[in-house]
Structures are given as structure tokens and as C-alpha cells.
Length: 357
Image (cartoon, rainbow, N blue to C red; front, side, top):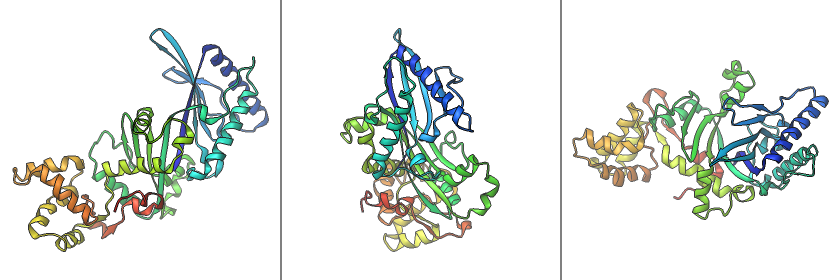
């Protein structure tokens, strides 16, 4: 359900300087007692912050101290990127579950308590995770499949934006409010462990569906009264997580199953008139042979039919007809030798109950 949480807290200049020393002292102490030496706070290339990845044992992926000028005033804040499942499960594939909230909060409390032990002059960071503001949260669900290559290809075929298509083993869309990343987690894990040479031994892969929710998206769900505040105890919510993923599934790949063209036409002919099927077939041929942004399909059909099939008719009648028979507008190529693939939403039990029949 939850992969990563990014937490932030505003601080003043004096406390920032105190934290800088305290964090480095904590790392130095760890280096004396641990065979694995960690790097102290160091400057990012953009020089907007200093950061360290020294606290992985607590599930802390990164800790940053920011400084920024705003209208002549210098603002300072601390940002912590926290991956609870890394500590709770010690499993590179694991996601934090709904019932893990208390344990995740306790681990964070222990980490902040550890840092506070190195802070001088009586200043302490709040140990309660809910005092910190969530700046970003990454919701994710995943499923195992032998058809990992096919699924990722189908995701890409229904979304043509070449500037987003930068990774072979993922479908990635970067946005102002969210980043969508549907990717092969098995490849990612093996790559990080320098074990890609073993990839051929994995006939079944884990495919992860992840939505990285930024501050503007969090503001939006507060505006919609889905949650009241951008804090962990409210955002650690299965309903919010599921709906965030489903909204992106519906926008980019749909929630209907994938069919080969031959089987798809058979299903359509059993449900609709010959005239209507002929029009729907144009959609299927279009997405079968082209990478096509699905939202562009209605206009493309109108253009290719020289106005005989209106874009509005495609949106209002033909797409709903496909949905009615559980058929994705993107077809499975014949040469794959596969007749049908379930939509990922059907393979993830936590999402099923949020799909309307």
C-alpha cells in the first residue's frame, strides 16, 4: 500500500546549524561502531540542500537540510524520506500495509529520539510522526506474473508520449501533481544488487503499480475532503491509496481486460449489431498497430473516417460498449499467441472492492 513517505518540518537558522552538527555527530558515532562506513551530510549538485543516506537501518532513505531565499527571507527545513517496509519486513519487495502504521510510527520515533541524543542546547525534533507534514507519499500495489513484458508493452501501447517513455522496463508518466510509475520491480531489485545476469532464472516477475503523490495532489485530496490534514495517520489509508492508483489506471490504461483481436471481435459480435462492431473494430485496429494516446483515439477515428464517425460518438457510445464487455481498447498482438490477459486491477485483491461493477 505504501512504499515511501517524505516528511518535512520547518526550522529556523539556529536549529538548522545545530541539526547539521548533530546529524554528523550521529553518523560519526555510527561509523565507530559499524563496519559499514556512512557518508556525512554533503552538498547536492544544485547546492540547495545537504543530505545523507546514512540511516538506512531505520528505513530512512535520505535526510536533507534545505535552505532557500523567499522574498528576501531565508527559510530552512528538514526533509526525511522514509520507507517503513524496509525496516518492518527486511524485504526489498515489501510494501507497508494498513496495519503497519503503529510500528512504522514507533520506528520513526526511535530514529528521531536517536538524533535528538546528539542535539545540544535543549532543542529537540518532535518524535511524533504526525507533527511532521507529509510532503509526498508513494502509494503502490503489485502482482506476480509470467507476462511482465506483455503487460508493460500494453501499458505503453495505450499511452503515446515519447518523452515519458524513458525506461524499457517501466511505464512512467511525470506530472506536476503526481508521477505514475508502473514497473518491473524484479528487474529493479536485481539491478540494485548487481545481479541482472541472473534475470533469465526469473520466469515470474513482480510488477508494481505506483503513484507518487506530490504536495499539490495532497492539497487536492484535502480540498475534496478525503483527508483533513497532510499527516501520516490520515494518509495511511487504504481507501485513499486504492483510489489514487485506480484514478491513474482509468486515465492511462483502463480497467478492462486485454484480448486478442480475433477473440475480441467474437465477444463483440455476440453483444452488438454488426454495424456497431464494425465501428468498434476501427478502434481496435488503431491501437493494435500504433502507440496511441487513448484520449486522442476519438479524434483520430473521426479524422480517418472523414467525419462519418464523430469523436463524440466514439467517446459516448463506442468506449462504453467496450467497457460493457470488459474489453480494453488496446489489443493483444496476434504473434504473441495469447488470447486474454486480465487487467492488473483483477490481480490485486485490495483494489477489486473499489471497482464499480
